[in-house]
Length: 113
Length: 115
Figure 1 (spheres, helix red, strand yellow):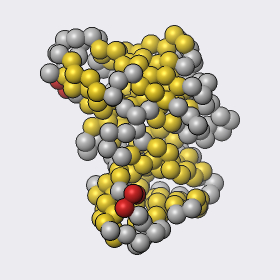
Figure 2 (cartoon, rainbow over the protein chains, first blue to last red; figure 1 turned 180 degrees about the vertical axis):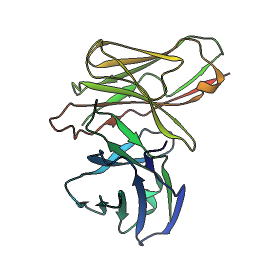
Figure 3 (cartoon, rainbow over the protein chains, first blue to last red; figure 1 turned 90 degrees about the vertical axis):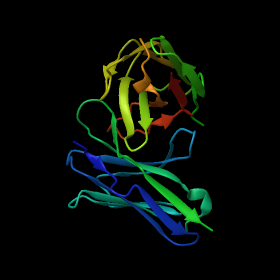
Figure 4 (cartoon, rainbow over the protein chains, first blue to last red; figure 1 turned 90 degrees about the horizontal axis):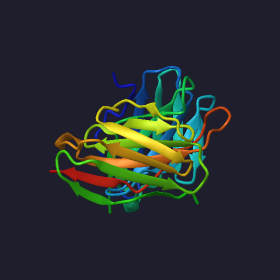
């Protein structure tokens, strides 16, 4: 049973436009959410996070929105750049037990010039 | 800067071999993790450790074991490698923070091919 879902395997966007990556979750106990970016043959790098007590967190071109009632979060990248082309993973943490993260399957973003 | 290093970037092994993957972090993190990443399946947690000599099973521990003799080092062991263990293996580490809102930092990964 997938608790963190990224329903779009891929997304194509033109340079300069907005990229919106979506993530849905089913476990209402999740209290912390993260986005990671991964280039081929490299490890994931942390991008941005949000606590469940907030609905928005912004860092430069990256903004994460959290809608707790819909159990949905999204990552907005504005403006998109070709260097943003990568796989983006959504992850969520439950406060129960140990500090493990549950990851989605990822969305491959392609930003074309 | 947090640094997580993995002993090999690429490995080729034969079926039945014992395989050791090493991970070292230099930030005095309490928690360390091993994941595998496969196309269409995302990152799946194999094992993790929250202290020296402590280990916990993740979602897919079968066919693997781990060792954490020192705080900075976490080893993943494939006791008898099989072709279905061909994958990208990723190590991560994190602090234990009050409230649990810590970030995991990943190594570059080891791409393992089992023939």
